[in-house]
Amino acid sequence: MSQPPDLMTLNEYGDWALYEDAIYAEYLATVAHANLRFRDAPVRVRFNPTSKRKGYGFWHLISEAPSQSNRNEEDRIPNLDRCARVRWVAWCVQNSGNEGFSWWENQRRGETHVVIWAEEHDFAVMLAKRSAQDGPRYYLLKTAYCLRPHNVTKFAKERDAFLAQKD
Image (cartoon, rainbow, N blue to C red; front, side, top):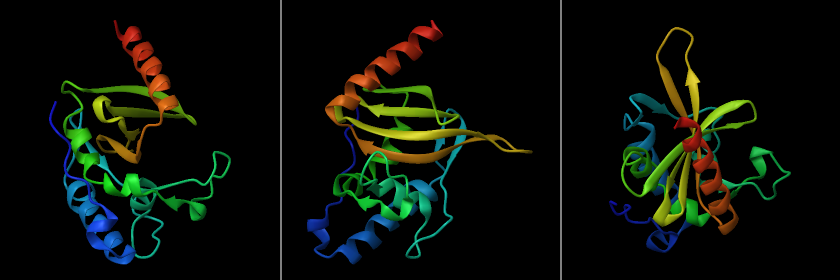
């Protein structure tokens, strides 16, 4: 298994504003403008609505809801573990077919999602499967996060069930 890219920590920058700009620049370079592909289809990100001159997809990627019941995007709180791993998103997508990674499809709120799991590092990337009206199929980056112990068990069951269906 390839090793993940270096983390980008707040300590390296010492100031939230500098850090935020640095991880956003990294997100743009390695994800939003990097021509990422998953299973021969482009991976795209959502830019609107913007907040603080940064795209929606970025904020969703580096933050989390304050509670399971709160789906208000304005209430999301930056998560330093997510911020530090912004480089890992492209790494996961690019290595999704390699040893140490697994991926599967699931249904979430009426959409087909793809979960890419870097198993040794308990990090996951979520993509939504999309079809354009007159164009090629693509995947929309939804989010990425570090797994908690209860996620690991759930992910393993979900992955194994998906793979069993394909056999």
